[in-house]
Amino acid sequence: MHLFDQVSPAPADPILGLSDTFRADPRPEKVNLTVGVYQDEAGKVPALRSVTEAELRLTKSGRNRSYLPISGLPAFNEQVQALAFGEGSLLPGTGRIASLQTPGGTGALRVAAEFIAQVLNKRSIWVSKPTWANHPAIFARAGFEIHDYPYFDAKNHGLDREAFINALKAIPEGDVVLLHGCCHNPTGVDPSAADWEQIAGICRERKLVPIVDFAYQGFDRGLAEDTVAVQAFAATDLEFLVASSFSKNFGLYQERTGALHVVADKSQAAGRVLSQLQVLVRTMYSNPPAYGAHIVATILNSTELRAQWESEVAGMRNRIRSMRELFVQHLKNAGVSKDFGFLLEQNGMFSFSGLKPAEVEQLREEHAVYMIGNGRINVAGITSDNVERLCQAIAKVLS
Ligand SMILES: Cc1ncc(COP(=O)(O)O)c(C=O)c1O
Image 1 (cartoon, rainbow, N blue to C red):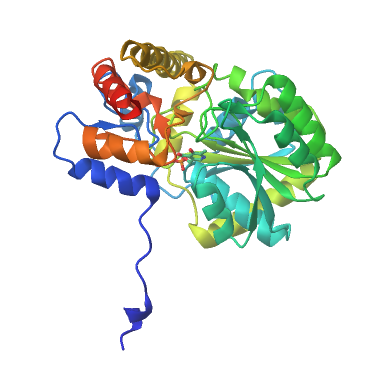
Image 2 (spheres, rainbow, N blue to C red):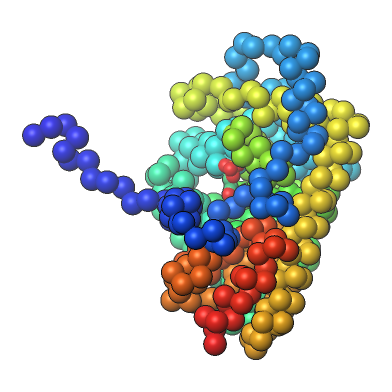
């Protein structure tokens, strides 16, 4: 008997596993709409020009090579706090926010989970049905009991507003509730500004602990406009958490760059929270990776680079929007009778196509078109080159 004989193989990650199958597929016309990365018109994951310029500046400036503080690069924390809470927000100036640079948005969520479980002694969380598969996995690993609240109305391809709001009202007092700040993954369906006000009001009334997962800032309507959910919470006297990711909006997938913001009722409490977060981080990964944070801070601190970055984010957002339009138009042209107009109402990179698991499988097997089994597509994987083939394939499968 050897030590590792007792270790059974873990199942492959459902999304990343599909990417491996896609890579091994020899068919040259294959189309990948699975993994959540932005791709440009050439189907490539682009390096933003603002990022490349910031890298050049960093190389020339000879940055400090020592460890970062446990809570990360101060210039980064200051800038990304202002970004997440939106221009004009008074909160960042109050000292009520404990901000911490983390290894990506996933790192922010995991640190939040450890903090809530170990320091606040809460272990019950509510997530939307459906949600990003890693949400329940991250919180279960930190010892949470996972519950879900209704969210998506599959019949109308939109928000199941009534069921969602009623379920929020019934969540036990003091529980944690995870919400998507914008561009809900996997459905692309978001609450309206008025809904967010109502949601924040319910969270306040029920004394819930909201975590806003903010992985796609800038991919819905704009960097400032997309703070609507965060602003709705900030407008109350709620204590809440925000997990930001810079993987998508800076194209920093590899650099693991994110932030956790914990909003306390007063600045003394924020100081105590930060001290506990630092203890947790010290025992998990000691301090965060520096490179991505230096890039983000360089861009946000330079008027010129910031303007360039904002226009590049707008470029990504607009390309996705126009691919949604092209997709819907080509489906019509291919003779698909089902109305896919709802795709135009959905936000960000993802949409629930409404295609059934058997149809998704047939698309993969017979047409080399890859999407997630639940019908989620990454709209950013569509290009003017592949859209016609993609829509012809869907037409054949639906006929
Ligand atoms: C909803 C959601 N939250 C968080 C993340 C985490 O992003 P990362 O850890 O790559 O920064 C993702 C990434 O796909 C996501 O879709």
